Image (cartoon, rainbow, N blue to C red; front, side, top):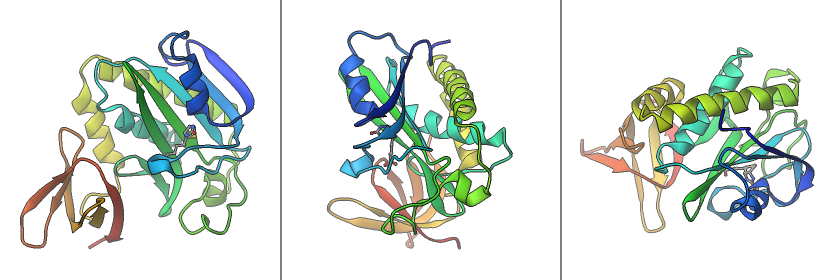
Length: 236
Ligand code: BTN
């Protein structure tokens, strides 16, 4: 077992990713930081991440040979964890975890020299979101009316992460991608991807072997998107 070989268990912290950063030189690969509450949780692209008690806020210190496909394997691990409870989550590229068109979990991967901090946030037993988030975010509790045992879910997630990380280490990237394709809600959808300088709109036809989003443009041209903010426009 790599992931979960050591656990830092905290009641409250600014951000588990930041806490993991302070441990990076002294703790082994697979060390997990878990917190019940974050006071300054970080989302992608410098957004804040709402992290009240009730959610699972965790970071894992990894030392992979390559970065890819860590984020994808994290999303797959979250989906498989909830599959155990018959709760079917969907993956929205690059690594949002969705339920009923709302975001219920997210992944933030940060690179520090030859290490990676894999941060995962799951909105598990959260009863209410601030007004500005309630249209786009939700929790497993609000969507399913089920209150799951947080530490049990955390334990299952560590096991899933460990299995998939091992798969990755053994070069079984394609197997992870196959699972990602199984859980994605993107295939066939009309999307708009925004970049700092432009935006493209088209239909998602695949996830490339390199994790890119493969989009067919209205003129039939194929565009491969490796990074960007993606919005589903319609499901035609
Ligand atoms: C996203 O924007 O989708 C990524 C959200 C990642 C949130 C998690 S919560 C645990 C870890 N610590 C943080 O500060 N952020 C990540």
